[in-house]
Image (cartoon, rainbow, N blue to C red; front, side, top):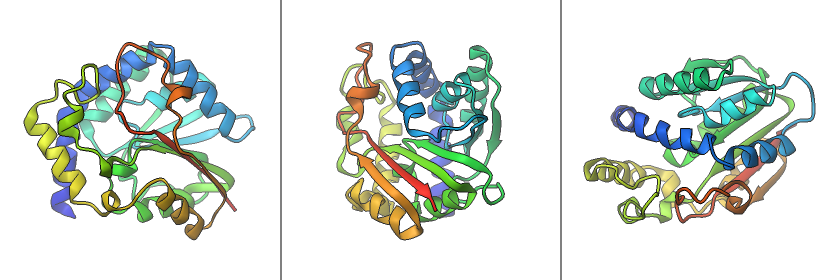
Length: 240
């Protein structure tokens, strides 16, 4: 586990600047408004929303939600990624609380947030059930979990890297190989998603669980680049 975490952190530290530049372009595109509308339609309808962005990366979702008036805490394990996230937030003129930490073992008290959101994170975790339990713990009663991810266990990033404008296009071959090794070494890659996740959320105790199996047409409107050719699902659960 320790070797995986070290290798994974190093991978995302090295990817941070290029990945941040990609998300900056996304913030400047029509996709940002699509994401904001999608999120606000599925989050709790209450003022002063306290939201945790678990595995924030360059803070794309955190910035969108902060602009919508939410109080956002953004957590990531990569120091370089957090540096990029803070720069992006400053550039966009929003106030976000940034915390370095492990999404599988959150450094927050019970029932701290009205919502936990996550995008493209769980596919990269060695213990997804542990993460879901930790997210459940920090949610308030009636709080909402929104997890956006893809079934990357079925993908080969060495192939998608050849697609022009793709998120992995232009990434060094050695980094692509590292990503493939990391992905293939963890259990979540052997499960078919999102049905596996849906069952896990129900087992943990989430209620009113639902899944939208492919939301790409709802949030990916920009034609400036291509996204991974894998369905982007949205899992939603409510804490009892």
